Every structure is written in C-alpha cells, then in structure tokens.
Image 1: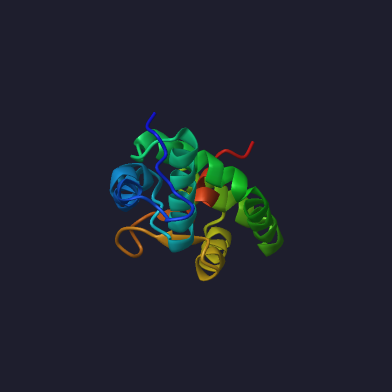
Image 2: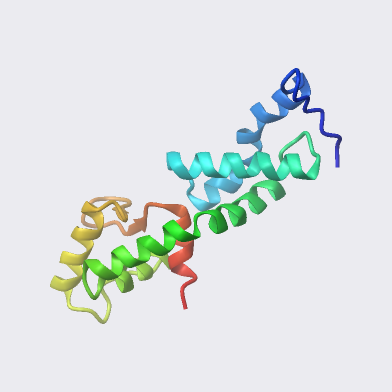
Length: 156
C-alpha cells in the first residue's frame, strides 16, 4: 500500500496524476477480458477502479483494483441490470432465455424453433441488447453490455 498524496487544496499531486493516467493502461487487460469497451461501462469501471485504488491508499492501479472495480460496478448497476431483465421479459416469452443463452456463450438455436429464435434475435439486436460477432450470417452473437452479459450468465 502506498500513501495517498491527494491534496484537496491543491488538487491531485503529480504522482497521483501520473498513476491516474496509467490507470486505463494498467487495467486494460482486465477490461478486455470482460469485453468492456462500451463507453458507459468503461467510465463506470474507470471510476470504480480509481476509487478502489484511492481507498486502498495506492498510487498505482493494479489488476486487483480492476477486478474489485468490476464487482463494485456490478453492485452499483444492480437496479439498471434488473430493469434490463424486466425489459427482456416484456419483449416476448423467449427473449430472456435466448439472451441468457447468448450471454453464457452458447448457440441460441438448438432445441428451439428457428423462426421464433430469428425474430427474437432480430428484436434483441434492434434494441441493442446483442450484436453479431464474426461474419454476418455465420458468426455468433454477443450481449453488448459486459455487466449485463455477466448478470444474465449468472442468473439461476
């Protein structure tokens, strides 16, 4: 643990500014593992990562801070994630199941009627819940929001 050199009167110290600038570079591999390149999620994770480092009294952001920040972001965004699940339930009776299947990295078509899955995927894509990865028509699908992806994948 380092010492916190934040000064409320003079603003951040040069050491704190340098560590803040390096925060994204240091935590980037952890964010890439979660696919968190969305603006809102990136900002929330950056905020939570810096908060974790400051609360620990560290001047350098580490991958442990980034991992802790992801957990903090999940908690901070719990209400919005629950609302997204409700929106999925309201869309149609298959939307939550199909989106959850995609979040778990599985193919949405097996054991389901292709036309129903196709219509649901089209609606989920149009609403921004999922996007196609890889070659159109041949690639899979991914839940676009990393926090929602994890939330759905962990639903019982």
